[in-house]
Length: 319
Figure 1 (tube, rainbow, N blue to C red):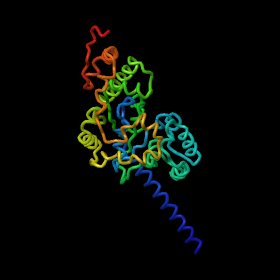
Figure 2 (figure 1 turned 135 degrees about the vertical axis):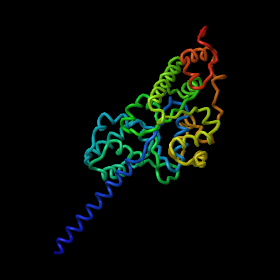
Figure 3 (figure 1 turned 30 degrees about the vertical axis):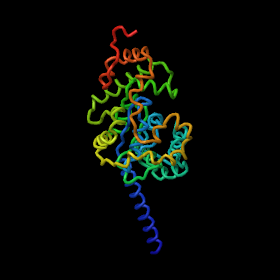
Figure 4 (figure 1 turned 60 degrees about the horizontal axis):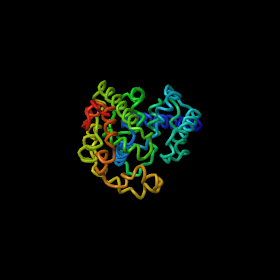
């Protein structure tokens, strides 16, 4: 009789663990995702940091793993121990994933506990939730992700996360060119850079027309001039309360510099060490030559004005 009781107790314990795992997977899967769409050097890292400082948002540094690994794993709905370990191995090879500073063994242990019926989107969300932010977190209401390349994969992102929301961040195409050239992210060819700006703008606005409720647009210039107003609006878009503490993100400067090399920070993300400032807006007026401005205005054409940026030169006689 005692053996039967032991067996029944073990079965009950096993059933309880299964129920707990199902509930955990359900809870993870229920957290919605939003994406920041932009060109590089448009202030997307600043916007990510402001969201990272929010206690109810989990938004790691950029890493395009969900798109890159989707062809291999996207259709999988059942994961065993080996599948998950293979996934983590591939995850470690992704560009910029090392910037998350995760404990890989803990990640493997946690994800393998989810083995069984599980879709790709939920597994990706579980990875996001392992990022250890510098900012204190409460209950997570949203997972965020920012990557300039996502503008090219909007349809795929929506297929993975059907309820996703998108924040389109724009910046004056002339300032954008100057910033890119300064940090040597792209070839300093203004016609090429401004053409990419136009291409991304068209891609994102076209997608927004198909599902306007899932998209909102913010200009970098408005964000840095009115950070509280704009962040309140974005929080309203996500349906969460605004937290004024997010504007004090720069107080984590010393902790930030313990993780990332100071030389890299000073070159690429120096603005994250200080309060939000608009001192980089309109810098193109003094940094670009007249010829560069003419080329930029000509290449972007009417799309610059659509985004709210006034052209200095008309298309006629641009040379």
